[in-house]
Image (cartoon, rainbow, N blue to C red; front, side, top):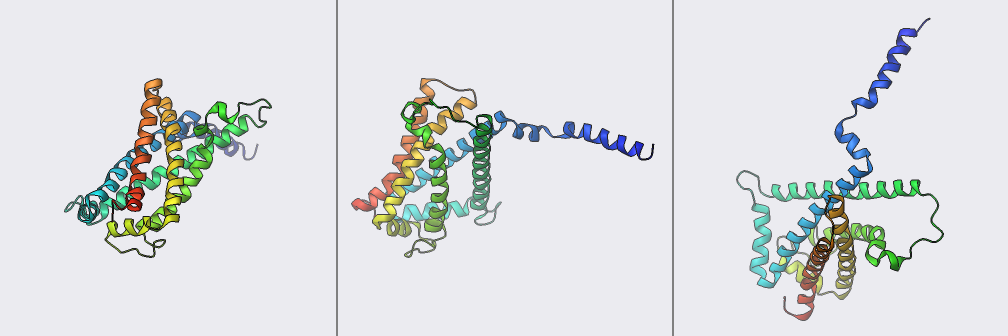
Length: 242
C-alpha cells in the first residue's frame, strides 16, 4: 500500500517520543517534582531574605557601615569578577528562583482544582485550616507586587523622590521618613511572615522533614525575618536611625 513505510515510521517515532523525554522534564511534569522545585526555590529565597535582613540591620551602625556594605557587595569577587557582576549573578539566580516558585505554585493550584472541580459543601472553615495557609495564594500575589515596588523604590530609585545613587543609608532614611511608605512595608512584612510560617513547614514536609520541632523552627525563622526587617522603619520613625 502506498505510503505504508512512511506511516509505519511515523508511528514508531510517536511511540518512541515519550521515552525520549529527559528525566528533568519528567520530574518537572510530576506533582512531586513541582512540589520539590517549589520547596527548594522557597528555601533559597528564605536564605536570601535572611542575609538581606542582616545587611539591612547595618543601618543601625551608621551611614559609613551601611554604605561600605553596599559598596562591598558590588566589589565582591574582584578581580576574578568585574565590578558589580556578583550582584547581577545574584539577581539572575533569584529571578529564576522566583519564576520557578510562582510557576510551580500556580500549576499545582490548577492541578488541584482540576482534580477536585467541585468544592466540598461541608469543607473545613478557614479557622480550622489555619489563617496562614489560607493566605498563601493572596499573600504570594501581594508579595510579588511588593517586590516590584520595592525594587523601584530602593534599588532603581524611581519610586523614591529623594533617592541618591550610591547612598543606601540616605535612601533608607528618606524612604521610611514617609508614613505611608511604612504602612506599605508593614503590611507586606506581615504577609511575608505568614507566608514564611506556613511555607517553611510545607517545604520541610516535601523534603521529608516533619514534626513539632520543624514547625517551631519554621515559625521562629519567620518571626526573626519579619521582625528584623520591621526594625529598620521603626528605627527611622523613632529617631534611632537618621
